Image (cartoon, rainbow, N blue to C red):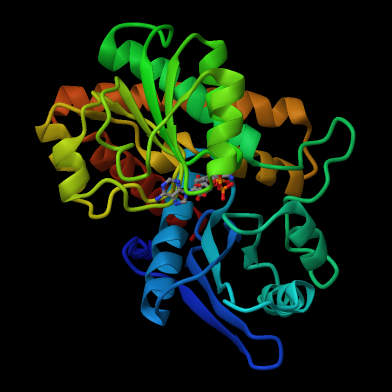
Length: 351
Ligand code: NAI
């Protein structure tokens, strides 16, 4: 029997650079792994200070997508597109066309979807040049459409489970600090308010927090305060890297459970949370609702099939939290280990 080398989960399979002077389209498509299937992951359109920070973001997000898809039981590998958002006015359609052509040139090895800074309309524009895209308008009864409410549903169910596990109670009466009230954060806030949680919120865009303060009675604090406020649960729903040496030190929460990708600035930050007695619900495990719905859309499945899979997120989180508690390790380390194992075993079985 030929021995098949396991894929190195720290290395990316492919990286594709996008650089089009005519439209100003600049960015990267990173394919971390295709062991489980085509690499699936969103397209982020964001302003980065440097090429290096764009590249680091693309590579980290692509790997997180591999782990996320593996733990969600999806037949997809992990990839991510990141585009530099021009500072001046730009022709959005032309930029997305160039991006779509780059996706098409990969022949289905990468399937794109909306992410921070891109929308369903954008994906419909991308669809004019490639079929390797999800996050389009949903057909009746079929999965599809905006992934954000699905992500929020998965995070909400995971938070309900994690609160019982770590705090020994339901969400009613608990104070939840939500950082970022965009598509996912605002939907999550509505679910939390309906469950009787008290909300403290912050966003760079004050119009977003004002609406939630008015409709849900949420208390608004500044973006510098949100990670330090007195609360039971901290829910990062903005961008990544918000859990670092400084913020972990000043967190008052006993549980961290949010939608943002790559919340830990460094892998060791999972241990820092553990050392402070703070339970961490691994980001890519609990924010898989959106990609589950997108994958179902891409495969022509129904809303019901997508919902059933999203409901399994909390069960998987429970398995991770129990194993972490038994071994005395961080849930982040347990989730990484599980995801890598799935990728390696599937790779071996297919070879
Ligand atoms: P969004 O772009 O709709 O919302 C993000 C919000 O965060 C915006 O309102 C923005 O003003 C705010 N924000 C940015 N920096 C901030 C800061 N320092 N402090 C407070 N607020 C800040 O994005 P969306 O879709 O809600 O996603 C949120 C996070 O969840 C992102 O990290 C995304 O990668 C992740 N995620 C989203 C999924 C989805 O289905 N949309 C799926 C999985 C992960």
